[in-house]
Image (cartoon, rainbow, N blue to C red; front, side):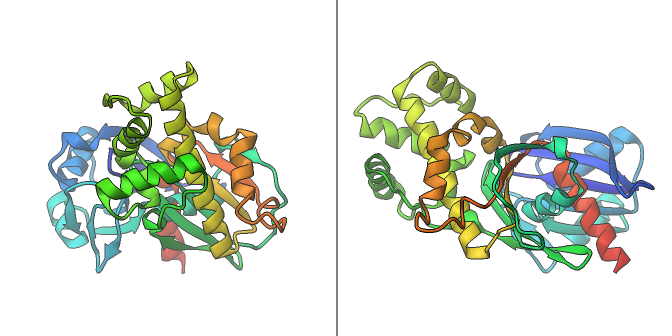
Length: 318
């Protein structure tokens, strides 16, 4: 039994993982809580384990931030912790941190077909890399690479790529954002952490008052025909499509693209729109490279927990 976790900028998800005889991973005691409830990572873990009355000997935690020398500093949360400190504070024999999108990517081969929504069919190339990317609180990227009968994951920090506006409206919004915030990344424009900034910039472009609104309200008003909110959703979606096209070109991900993250799920109707797919294809219009790449949305909430378990057990087997 392994403690697995997926700790992001907004939520902390935990479960107990085990591998079954059919080589599938079973996640039990799944729990999701707002990370704001806890002042530190160890307190979030102890709250979960104390509720179960058990302490597994091993843990692998998918964390939203770069991992270096067994330590993570979260990108969108004021938490920093080492594996050794966590072992001592939580009474766990061994703890390993992996990047959250490393876990998300590693879960893809373990997921059944009903864990995905097909966005673009394409023609995948067997044995080719698969890009796993998408916006949540931040913007994660990883490349899944088949190696013999197993898989390797190359983690990335693609959310910090430069934002690449294409339309006149996007260029105008870019200039507003640049004047207010300096360097503009993909993450700032289409992830949750930048929503207020993007919404404000669109309001400035339309010379209208900015009223802070939660993500669900912006989406609802966009669906009701609100021009400001619709533009916010459209710009976020276009930014996502250009970012994954750029990532696929960079990594030659002919095996497919898997979208993940809460923002991608909420924007599924925009992402599936033919105009959004055309924005994706337009990143290399002279060639069918991008048109041949399948695009799917990963919807299973336990996916990164499965990926964390698969990572640890594959490592132990080797």
